[in-house]
Image (cartoon, rainbow, N blue to C red):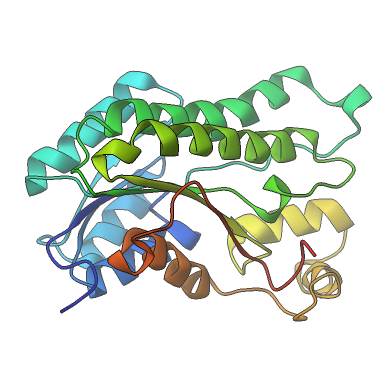
Length: 252
């Protein structure tokens, strides 16, 4: 039997990158998915590629409470249940020292990552089946940091505190809550981060980041998706409150 047979998942940031790779793998493993994101054309195309029986979508700003609640209701209403929540939406923000960092950008980065994950939990947990799973996509910099990324690193660390609190609050229902901490992954999102960090063209910037990774390469979105699948499936039935690092050794 497929590992997610008859399960239903909501994935924020589901129209591209790790979110879309996760959706494809979930569907291949028997799940039905609801994709929530900002890019209508990409959402529509992604859902069409997954098949109308397997996927639905909604334009959803994760910082808007009504939109998050509505997306969750749509997912449960369309497919009759909700078993997995993947809080994956994110933005990079700017680069700059703390003393120079734009306050409005700092606030927006925290809103997307932390408030967004909070709203998915607040409105998703009441709908989630007992025994379900929640995965919050954090980052290697949710466990480490570097100069110039105060907003992103702070947001990613904050997600861990939110996860650990939620894991204890819903353990009585058998619901597991974990964070995933990918290292550099070959997506358009990561490419933009690397170009901004190095000031170099994409290929040169990627090589500079490869040099920081002990395994010497970026992950593919599909590799990260397999770790999301592990946390979503019964394979991780005794894993909760955990920070799963998938970064090629970068945090060590």
